[in-house]
Image 1 (cartoon, rainbow, N blue to C red):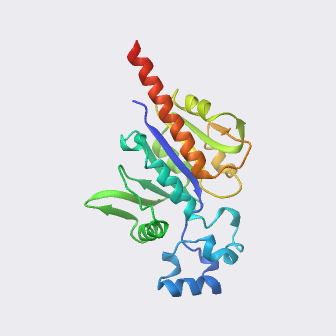
Image 2 (image 1 turned 120 degrees about the vertical axis):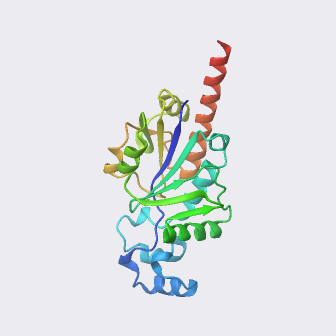
Length: 234
């Protein structure tokens, strides 16, 4: 049986980095929330000026992107039927494993609270069921752990393709991995690109990550259904 893995890579999800903990805006925000900066998510909506001081600032502080992508990935039959594994790789090399049949908060503020709790405890459970697990590791570490048959990255700087063809390429293999960037601007680092067998572009436009996530996962579901129907007609 084909097992699909979806990775949201270099995601703009992190707690406030040490480089800007002394920033006045950051300190004021953390004081209002009554939390240490190491337990607060970096967010462009509140820390924009401070984020400009960071390297690759255009790829930082957008937990809302991760939230939307996760809602897309965990709200579909492919995930409900346990045919889809979901992982988050973050910009600062953390890996989040999303458990099976996890119902994530649809309200953004509750999602932020959940992820901040995850960063503190490293695991989040409900009734002894694993919801989320946080570990250290880069994209290479994650891919080596998954041991996929093929790894496909989606980027506007990749070779021109279509959602249909991307799904068809991946589903020729038993354990395909599909990777979407979890950031607002820019593209994958050269290091991340080296982890991919294919780098493909499905649009001439810089589409939002949640749009690409929804469309490629829908196309994968459609192709799997078509393949199943063809096999049953034989």
